[in-house]
Length: 100
Ligand SMILES: [Zn+2]
Ligand SMILES: [Zn+2]
Image 1: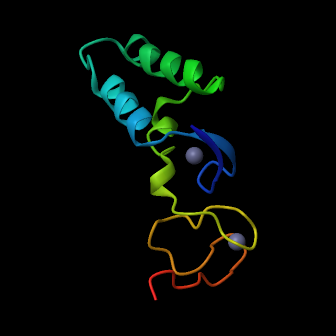
Image 2: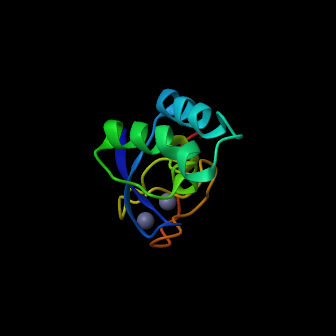
């Protein structure tokens, strides 16, 4: 878990690493027969225990995955939004080509 800027939520949110996210995804897709509120309780509880953040929107958790956002911008520190972004959407900083 890592606190990162989410451009969708426009705030810092606890983002999950790959393992944590896989578990969250499992909890999200489990038991679709249950009524809506009950169905998402295990996911929201899991996220809360992991992050200490009382998220109420289960769908928001599904985009809070560290690797979806790419590395942090060297200028402003916010993530580049996607792993393949060529510039920072927050401050416009051009991302240096790390592969060359
Ligand atoms: Zn978000
Ligand atoms: Zn930036």
